[in-house]
Length: 312
Image (cartoon, rainbow, N blue to C red; front, side, top):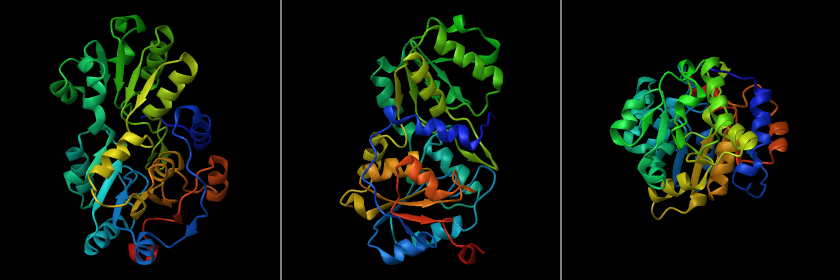
């Protein structure tokens, strides 16, 4: 697992404006105790949760997450998890959430991986493209035109000169040698990327990971690489979500997230309301300062998805 400091990740986000959707108009956030307080005081008709930083941080389920999910279900509201976790299909994501004690069904998970088929159709089904992933065989079984890029650190940049582009699914399994080889690939012969996970970083059990979004932004900035991002904050994923909520006005849908540049930017840009929780990316940070730096403002702010009394 490759990690980075908060300042490096935050600077990447701040420099990414040219590749991200336009920011929504500012609003004045209201501080609340948690998700239940928002639902008690508004006409919210559906709830959408981020996973990392809201429900869990890898191996650690966040206090109050399971209770918050149960509360949404008691209210009879539609519930979805909108995530940039694309290592597995949505059913696999739901299985992982269940292992953490979180009651989420496979049909309630929406991710950038859902958009991969249409992205590959646009490039000839993936013929001549390589796929870089922890579990590439699952993808090749579904998209047989793809070529698995294996043993990245043990190869040379020229070994992959015959490929026209890369689907970069995840890099959680990388070491520094893998990262160096990927950077050399982009510098030697810049080729387009499809990235289902646009995250720059992710809170993971006390650390901040290096995610594919950071690699794609660096390739675009340094080498002019064309990058097709599929997940949050890009609008196609929110269009997919809205299609699952026919008849529900976007401003009656609440997104609960931890990252200004993915959750706030994506949700409010799509017309949803947004609750930012400080249990993930901004844990230990001066939230007001970071929101001012980003120019991205949620409708609501809470320390966590549920206050300590409810989480107990």
